Length: 286
Image 1 (cartoon, rainbow, N blue to C red):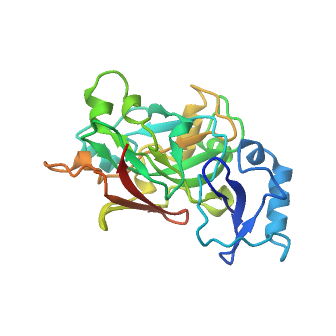
Image 2: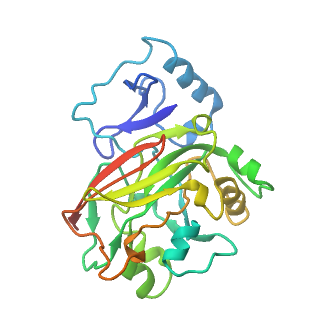
Image 3: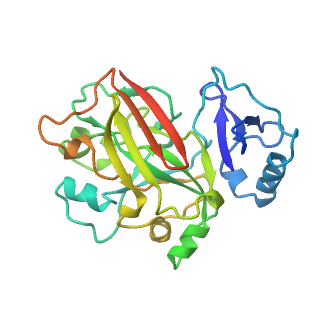
C-alpha cells in the first residue's frame, strides 16, 4: 500500500493512493498514519481490505491539496552517516567499521513539497537524497539482519538537508548541522514493506535547478537496511513510528570541487527513490 497524509500543516488526514492512482480518504477508517496503526495488524488488514473493495473509500480531489509527511507522531529519527561506498570516497573518509549514528528531531520533518529554509548565517547548506525506513514493530537486541527487515513497516523518500559548516566546523557533534528547521522533507508516501521486495535495489536521484547531482542505488550501501535495524536495536529500542534515514550516495555539494555549489534561496531541489515517489522543494531564507 501507498499510505499518505494530506491537508494543511498540523491538520493532515490519512489517505491512500490506490492501484489506479486515485487518492482515497482513510479518515473514516483510521485516525492517522502513525506508529499505532503500523503496529496494529488488524487495523492494517482493514485498510488493505477497504483499498481492494471498490467504492468503499471515497476519492479525494488532489487539485490544490497539500501532501504532508506520510507519518504522524514520529518518535525519533535515527540517521546513518557515510553509509555509501562512493559517498565516503568523495568526501575522503575511511569506510566506517560500524555504522555512524546521529539523530534528527521529529520537528525537522516537513512535507515532500514544502519550502526548505536556508538557516540564517548559512554558507554551506547541502542536499542528500536518502531511503527512509519506518519501523513497524518494537525492536530490541535483534540477532540477524533478517530479523531487522521483519521489523520494517515500510519505506519513504527522505531529504537529509545538512549545513556542513554547522555540522563539521563549529565543534561538537553533527547534530547542529542536521536539525535546522525544515531539514527533513519526508514522503510523499509510506510504501509498505510488501511492495519493496529488495530495499537494496532502489535507485536514488536528486536534481538541483534541473541538473542531476546524485544518481545512485541502495546497492551501494555499506550497511544494508536489515543490518542497520539489527545494529541500532543493540543501542536503543526502536519503536513503531520511528524513522531511520539510511545515508546518501555520492554527488553532494561537499564532495565537489571548489567553489562548491551549496544551496541558496531560490534554488529548487527535486529528488526521488524508485517506487517511493518524488519530492520538490524551493529554498527560501529563514
